[in-house]
Image (cartoon, rainbow, N blue to C red; front, side, top):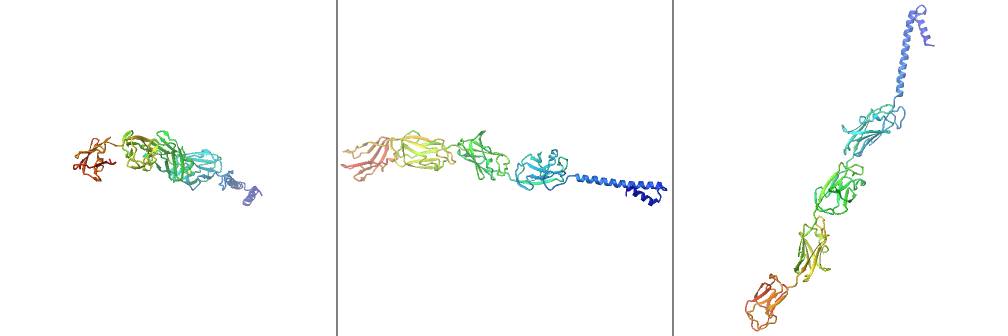
Length: 457
């Protein structure tokens, strides 16, 4: 039955006469029509709302772009809860569908350390948004990243809720110590420079580009090696004496995770002076050197005694090496010949450049000097002469030498007069080049006396 027929039937029930009550019937029909319109209007509104609901985006539980699915963050780098994150890390978020790049910005993609916003720039490509911090992240620090609901896809659908994740940075490597230390002086000229790091480093990042050594603005050539936590710079040639050098570890040096040192590490040191021979005894070109002479050399600074020996300190007569013993005390090295030197002979002394000071610096070159020994002292005449007869009993016995003698060696021990096997009493004097023996009493008559000058003179 149609709606119109139902209305007519109901009108007859009410009035009993359609014709006799036209006015009332019309009113009843009008009111009923309004009710029907209201019903249809309600159905239309519900239908419209349902269609809107059906056409809205829905959050999915899987990846991949599907029509009417809300935009979502499906992965991040670093991941939520990550630790030991690089300090120069770029933070990225990947969406499940292409986004409106204009809505991916520093307002919708933020990074915080606590409540403090980290400055940076945001870029977007494909389905990936990237936050690039303006400065390196702090070490051992927790950060929070957020993608807000302001991020929309290409059909202007927003994320259902803000996406928030956290991560913690790792520790930055640092220089613990250097050898030589900053400000060190007297550094050996052959020094290998080393740096100790706080943690294992990426060996590929420790090289001549990240470990530098300069003298002023001039790079020092050398080889960089790495072992354990230590980097070493071995100069190609020895350092210059009394010179300041500067070492630098750049921020290109990274640990095994890729964390770089926070800033360039710079230190300097000063090399020491070279050891020098400042005096010798005998001096260079000396003559009339004693045959029992102990040869010495004095250095400008304390030396390494282990480097002063019969190999580094030699005495030669021609090509013949003189046997002897080498000792060192204070700043003086001593060569004691095993036997007296030959008279009237030229000798050469050499201290080689292998002699080092206590810091390891060598002599700049071999130090060589020479000297000539004197002739032997000889008795050239006596008074009385040998085997003289009729000698005056008050005679003062004397001996004349060929050269000036050591007066202390002219004494009653080295100058004796005997009658038979018995030494007679007397006093010994020396003047000029003559030694004299004056008997305490007059000599006996017709008696043989024997005079002796020992090699102690």
